[in-house]
Length: 328
Image 1 (cartoon, rainbow, N blue to C red):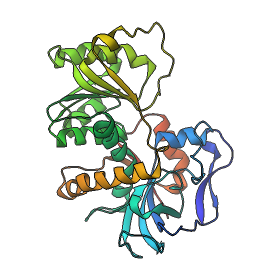
Image 2: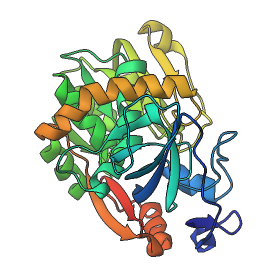
Image 3: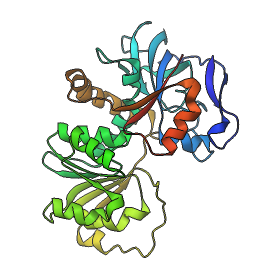
């Protein structure tokens, strides 16, 4: 089969389409002919040699896909059959003509959705769902601060927060992204390039603060995150794009406010965990995708021959929502 290969760890010039062995499904797996996949920050880190795939995962980039079932393992229990349109989360292998996925990780493509729309869902919506509800324990009526609000996870989180009657606030890096997030449903959106977000968040909440923060940035936001968290607030650290080392940090507010700080990843979780998360998410979200309450946010669709340009586009932080690759 053809797949996007990384010639050696490094820049996007190392990406090329070449030949790779077609995967063979295990007894509890589906073989899927991939029609679309999508980019994630982890793809860039893996391409650079900074984020190796988990043991036994495909070394090919790509954490999600949408396509058509070609083979069904003999022990699969989901009632799948060849020709079914499916999408789902992968530990790797999405940038290829074929991928395998455990049958309990596969979800049916929502009625009326294209493969490109379906491929834009798994990684960001499952990550947001996990962070908000499994780790962050979000409740109706609570206020959430979502950093990188215009990112794939950010746009998913805004919608999920609204769907349970909670209040989303976001930080963004441009006026265009600020307006987009407000149109998507954020109650407030703050441009972090126009001064510290903490003062604006406290003003918007009448100094009450927020119950939950989803943070991708890390060290540079540490002090402000603690300022905006209310008593018994929760901070969920998803990534450390801005750095991991804290300078002149104090733990005083953690104790004074009884704050809870959690770090989480999804790719390295156990298969059982990801299967349980997928089943719960599918039950909650698939009807909402069909009704239009939830929607994948796609910035651009690239043919996979332009994968280098797609990576450049993500590295320049130009996207609002997902960047999708159409696989031919």
